[in-house]
Length: 309
Image 1 (cartoon, rainbow, N blue to C red):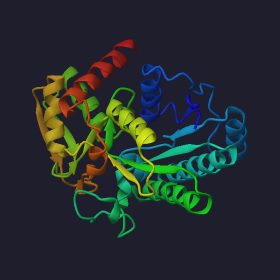
Image 2: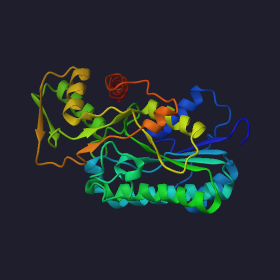
Image 3: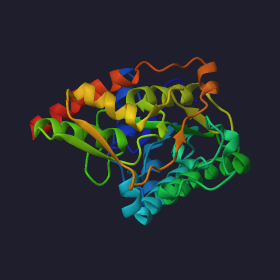
């Protein structure tokens, strides 16, 4: 690998990709690909781009994502976009001679009933959560394709599985947002309209492991520098929070005094999503933000967003 490897973040406009690019810039990494990204669903365009840019290290943070509502409404769109982006980038990375690639997947790729916290040994051991199965299968395909390139070509392609990410730059739209962004927007709106209560999907009992986006970016860069294993690496904090606890923390951060009501007729999704991130921690990585700190940073960013519009 060159002394100053040329870095490329695929999906630089996504929540995670933009954070990785921001952190690389803050660390004054000298050699970053900053050209306009091609249509990642176009194989020829991706191959031409990487052949021209010749990155040494590639972070794959590309592909559309959504919360439960978006996964129910557009499973084919989500699956196809992630399949195409992942397969085109991984195959073109090998063809262009990239020295190392990190493919980022989501914790939804774990089987719904796998033992907690999720360990990589549980992958492929059972069916995934039905509310996000199409998206999860696409991400699993990316993980398996990286593994296949390692076996067939000896490629230094590694994979990582992220906890539920949130933070500045998140999607706060009604249809596509994930749970932290969706609750923050809705509780903020309830505060500004003096609504007496906020209705929340599900029972509030499912537990999730949340990671602030800058922490995930740091963990991704850390993994790129330090990890060369063939197994996926979990990128998490080791702390789980129920949806009810998340909503209550957001209510406190926003300063909303109304009631939180849970609609049990709506789906909960997976009952528990926590990651076994001990391998990452044993390598020396720790998060910098706890959940409240991350939500406070996110809310500040969100307030700037809504006031600028």
